[in-house]
Image (tube, rainbow, N blue to C red):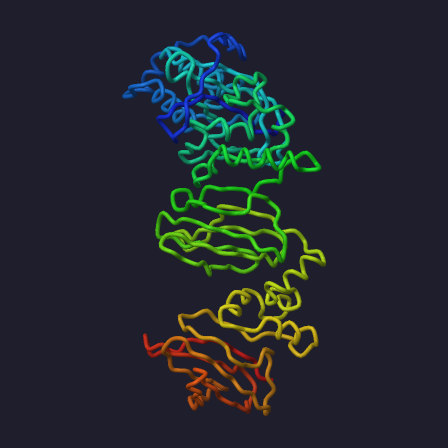
Length: 479
């Protein structure tokens, strides 16, 4: 194992008891295959019995050992502790020590295990490093499950180990997930009907078992990326998005782009099933929450407009949004911008770079601002800043308003709004309130012409009747 890399596995093969996985077996002639276990000076039988007290099967014993190791053993960032005894004494070790301790705790219970050698991908840069893992028999003579207690225990960043909180992602791992990141020296321990070649393994992106907790089928995802490899000129599949934990148990992902890099101006479909009463957003420059809901299903056809990160996020009780799927949006080329202008002109750089534009694109689309008109005015220099658009519970469309955020004192302006929910509307100019709207019943609009007399804010506001207060909707600056 190379210093600085946090890559190891304990492998247990698997049964139908958990995660709806199929049983996996090894050749009965495989006894003795794998890494030789270091000699021990301890009798682990007493502590093994304590750790597994109350269990009634080999599977439950393996789970109890996994949980204990994950909760009690830290990663040795000095990379010097490699044996079960050293791991037990210091409560730390590298992956080999994790594996040997697992082996020694399983041995007195009659839980048959094998320490295997192979490679795994570095989560940080997807490079490979040699490490060891275990095959433990939990059913019959040669059938069991896959486990990685080292990764289950936590991670290392900047030379500091951070323990995971009850991470069962790496217990009872489907071999079709494991092969994305772990490649055994002996193909038998892939536990696949059709073992992958080293070239196929190297071509796969970094996909973790966590995907399964969001409802993805391991076989379908593996087939998808292998097929992308077959048709790729580079011989590698598309990089995968990064899937993270925060929405596990709250969301099932029915559809999302499976490539890591998205392009500005292209439209991508997202479909999520909500298991709890949660709020979901797409964050790409602005925060977008305009999902189409059908029961617990929410869908959005989204067009990225800002290079950098695009993150599917869930709002937690603390009010913050936490990302659970992360993409990279590439810097746009001319074709990207041409497509963006067609699909989301309000997200064009000429508009998003204007003063007051930050966070306004979604709201401007919602209230019906004509993106093509605004883009033309921005390019001609007739619009040099935007009004401030406020989010509120007032439902309306803009039928005709000045699009420049700065108005001139003494000049006449007409504001036309199409209310879509009951509300009282007003224009506030320098502290003076105006309520004398002209109504056009056929169009369903209200209009008012104002000549600002002084400098300062001019605000369009509405009262929905829920309180005496008016909510700001649109604010201008009068100079």
